[in-house]
Image (cartoon, rainbow, N blue to C red; front, side):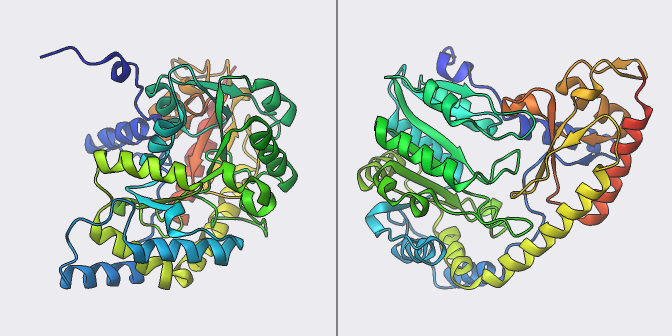
Length: 398
């Protein structure tokens, strides 16, 4: 066979998927592995989604759809942005895709030429870097304060060059759970306007919030930035519909048009039945969203209360999403059995080996010395997992 392209050969696998698959392999060998590595709700999709999908099947809605998505779903997305954020997006400014990840891919494809730069703040979701590099772009990483995981506007401004094309914003953040302050978001918007950049706003966790924290869309905060903001969202997290693979984008019409054109050559569009299911969820699934949000709050309260007295680690309580991003630098140099912890990756290896608990190393998110724990699982599993983590930490020596 022919050689694989250099572009694909330099692509690195998703660390979250890799750890989840490693845990699954060990489980298949008889190990009692608990995995807190995957960011996937454990809830069944809302009845409204299931009912809408059944109706679509019964009515034979199994054909190609418009590349940008069925008109009914795009209208529901428009209504959603009006209701949630008081923003008006027309159908021509909205597209539906097979999840948020392909939409990000299409956005980078539409924006980047070889050598162009995209500013990211660490910690950052694992796929941003790989997608940017796939299009021969350069991710420019801006470090955050390790004590707060908040970004510094001065450092972001200093990272912008004549090659910069976009800034990626992810709030609530995966993996840190940070919801960034309105004044910081407004300043990012002003930077985008000043330098004619696209602010890619990944807001897939915007309905999973804790302790009264409020999320506001950047365009709501800074209306003059409307032509510079591309919103990426999905039904995956909010409605527990990960497997349906439906995401949506709302932003400048010309950018949406180009992304839709690319989508026409790649997938032709998202699944017809899944789109009808997403429409059902967005129209009639809000009660289910509120119920899940309340349970996430209870899980967050539980996992933070259990982690608070543990030795050697610290964490910043999340304001949104469903992750704890824990600082494990206090364990470096310590030993358990014949294993010595030298970094976050060896910490995860030792934890899996000695405690049958799978986490994701912070290096995967451009933040060495940290690990991510997902609490998108039952309270019973959280209690068992935290007992294992506490026991592991208590046994560290040196």
